[in-house]
Each structure stands twice: as structure tokens, then as C-alpha cells.
Image (cartoon, rainbow, N blue to C red; front, top):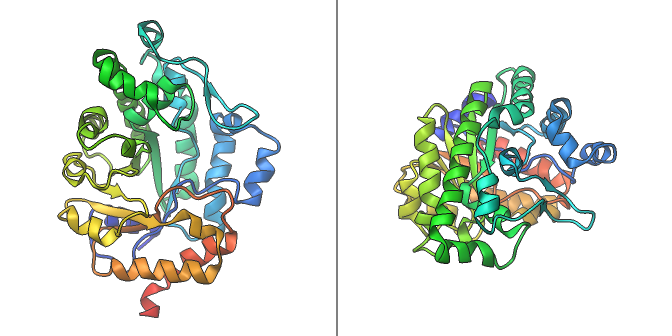
Amino acid sequence: MNSRDRFLRACAKKPLDRPPVWVMRQAGRYLPEYRALKEKYSFLEMVQTPELALEVTLQPLKRFKLDAAIMFSDILVIPEAMGQPYSFPEGGGIQMDYKIRDKTPLEKLSTSHINEKLAYIYETIKMLKRELDGKQALIGFGGSPWTLATYMVEGSSSRSFAHIKSMLYSEPKMFHSLLKKITEALIIYFKSQIEAGVDVIQIFDSWGGILSPETFWNASGKYMARIISALGKKVPIIVYSKGSHGWVQDLNRLDADVLGVDWTISIRDFYESLGRKAAVQGNLDPALMSTKPDIVKKETLWILKEMENCPGFIFNLGHGILPDAKIENMEMLVETIINYKSEE
């Protein structure tokens, strides 16, 4: 069984001899080859140039025996394609060119020509499919409507999310008009990713956990559910809603094939709480990748033992890999999973 088939069987909750492994945000500053490329090109240049995005996507696969690749891109390509560009200031962080705080900028957003504006991503996907040649699964992705809206309204990263929450409660008509537009754009985008050749779509609801249990479905969940319904089960859908694991009933309503979970709860408890309605991926604490190989091995084995005899388990970090991760720790992580059965 090749890596691609292993990954897709796990998404379908079929038994395997070992869980497949991939890592969110596989490429990045922890790899010297990425840093070397970053000295020559900006992040946006790498995202928008298919040849560079191809190279960055393949970098971790050349080092590690991963079962899936995640295309190199950014969730904010959707606001940009809708007419709200973004940049990375020298001081760090994200900066949107303007903020969606009233009807005027909201009305400027358009879902027309999404595919034309994002053609470079579809070309990257086609190039990756040729390079992977069916050996690893290719994961396409995008942000959830709620998560994208937080950046579009706040204008940057935020700690309080005061403006988007104020719009949610005080200007519900405007809020839902924005979320509907983003949802429409994402449906177009994901369908085109699938046509270009991705094997799986992942929706990153990175800020789902800042919502209350009472508002999660109305502000985030129902829009992800609309996307999943519109895609029609053409490929498996992964939803990673960080910090939302306590709202199992709402997560089950999404009808996703796979649900990601962060490291703050027991992955086995999360798996059981879903009633096996979805496969589960997670949930090693990313901070461990900055420690030592023996620590990574110990904690990886603990999760593997927790999830023994659980069809539909995909090993992953509980969030994206951090810039200070050590290559030897990544090597130990993958080696431990691949050799797990021989260590029982």
C-alpha cells in the first residue's frame, strides 16, 4: 500500500497496520533549504510562483517519509482574490490593505473572477500531482469563513477580536453578508482545487475556539457545513477547528470526513466522543518538536498507544510546526510512527 492510499483509507475510517502521518505547515523556517529560498524571494512571491511553491511543498517530503503533502499557500489568498490585498510588514505579523468595518468596503468585495485570480494555485497543484505521481496524498486547503473574516474585519492578527465580535452581535446583517460572500468564494476555490487534482481538502477554522458554545454554529459551523455540502463528497474533507473540541454535537453536524484536534485534550476521549462518525487527526503538542528526540519519541508512543485499534486515526501535530522545531525531532517522530508495530 502506498502512502496516498494509506492516507485516504484512514480518512475513510478503514483499519491500517499503522496510522498515516503528515504535519500541518510542513514547510517553513525550521528547514535550512526553506530559509535559503526565503533569502531570495518574499513569502508572497513563493506562494504566487508555481515553480517556487512546488519546490517548497516538496522540501519536507525529500527529508521525511510523510504520507501526505500539503500544498504551499496561504489562507489569505481568498480575501486578496475578493479585492482585499494583504502584506507582511517588516515588523512582523499580517496587514490587510483595509478593514471591513462598514458597508462600503464590504460592497467592494467580489466573488467574480476568483479562479482567474488564483490560477497560479491551480497550476501549482497540477505540477505537484505530476511530481508526487500518486505516491503521497496531496492536501489542498483554505481558511474557514469565520477565520478569514477575523482578519478581514480586524485588519490584522488580533488578541481580543473585538471588532469582529462586535459585528457578530451588533451588526448581524452585515456580519452574515460578509460570511456568505466568503463562503461563496471558498466553494469556487475548493471545487477548482479538486478539479486541479488535490486528493483531500482541509478547512482551517483557526479561530473557531474564540467563539462561545452558543455562537459557534451560527458564526462558523454552519458556513463550513455549507461548503462541505457544496463539495459533494468528491474528496475527503478535514476540518481543524482549534479549541472547539468541546462542541462535539456541532462538529458532528459538519459532516466532515476527518476532524482535527489540538493537544489540550485526550485524543482518545475526543475520538470516542464523536461516536466514530469521523476520522480524527492529531494531536502532538508542536512545542515538543523543539525539545529532544527521546522526548518526542516518548510522547509520540503515548499517543500511538492511546489510539491503538482505532480505525480512522491520522497522526499529526496538534497545530502547525513551529519555526524553532528541530529536524532530528521530526525525523524521530516519523521513524517512531513507521516502526511502531515492531516496537509493541
